[in-house]
Image 1 (cartoon, rainbow, N blue to C red):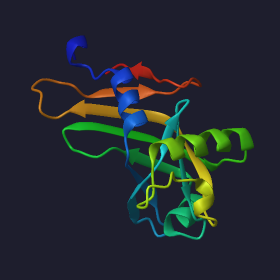
Image 2 (image 1 turned 135 degrees about the vertical axis):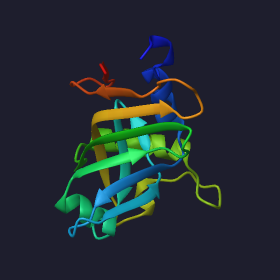
Image 3 (image 1 turned 180 degrees about the horizontal axis):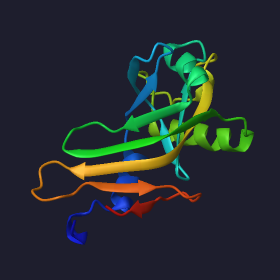
Length: 158
């Protein structure tokens, strides 16, 4: 792979920050996949989202916290794999709530707040690895990254 064809991480980070929809893939207890679109916020190297613990997504995450998320589209592909966990830090929850309110509005124009969905709980996806490629380009663009503790990943050779 030549460096000119590698997918740059700063571009992918901006896409994650600006995305309105994220597709989360979880695993049902019987092994079948469950994929749903959802709202979320990419902040400090993690994806934050809320869900009802009693929902299929919530039950799946309770049984198997490993998950994957990807953005819309099949031409500029980004897939992130990681482990999810409930967020119990009130300061982080307040920051995410403010970011959600700035990003999303309800059909009547009201800024979305996590408290609007009382059964929902805040979760985070802690990324472990990511892969991306640009489908329309000729030549190799497949790029991998791995997280080593910081908000941004390091490229994985290969």
